[in-house]
Image (tube, rainbow, N blue to C red; front, side):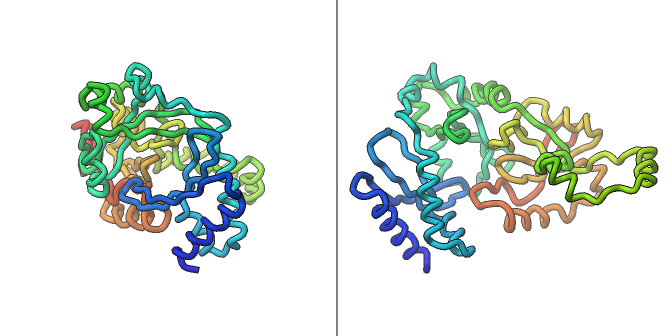
Length: 310
């Protein structure tokens, strides 16, 4: 079944499941990096906010072999689990005093978002763009943001510079930085049971020998925030790179893993960086969704000059 027939069949099935009591609509949505998605909404009038379900991702599940009936079950379950239990008051967004402490920034690709950026207050950072949003923590099933457009500044009667100053203050407070070795990140992704039973048991003699040796420091670090939510923006936090470079005793290669995190590679661990861009591009192609790609090349932090270059 091609995608057009998948969309038509899905909408028909959803309408049959819920009956006349709901309105089922499909509308195009432009996400980060000019990613065009089809957003499905199911409205029953019980609340003023309804989740948007992206059919593109469910079609990928179908192509991967999941039966259509199971895909439909997933869509219905996702709608029901994400539907708010009551109306959400969004009137606060018209009140600048209620919004100003929630304003944060995030980093996105400049070249991939030129159309969107025409309507957004933004600043350039190398070949990236700093954009702003209102952070909504602890909403149902996670965090959410409301992107800030130019017309919001007119309504609030503030400037883009004021917006940046607020975000520079709020973002590190609402989303504190987090620096972890890649080794620790991988270990935390496994339960103690899985880690213990998946690893071979060490020979006692080898263990004693390794204990007497000085362990090599980790060569790769993950820089993000504690929520792992638009964590690449941590690069904009005051002194975060200078402190990281001092801690690791090295200049740093910055590998843009996604909009949610970057990887720090001490220069001492990689004297020749000629192959880094190829690695980044391959990872972006194979493992990162289009809308979460930040950049296709590395950046360099010089701790003596305290600056980032491309």
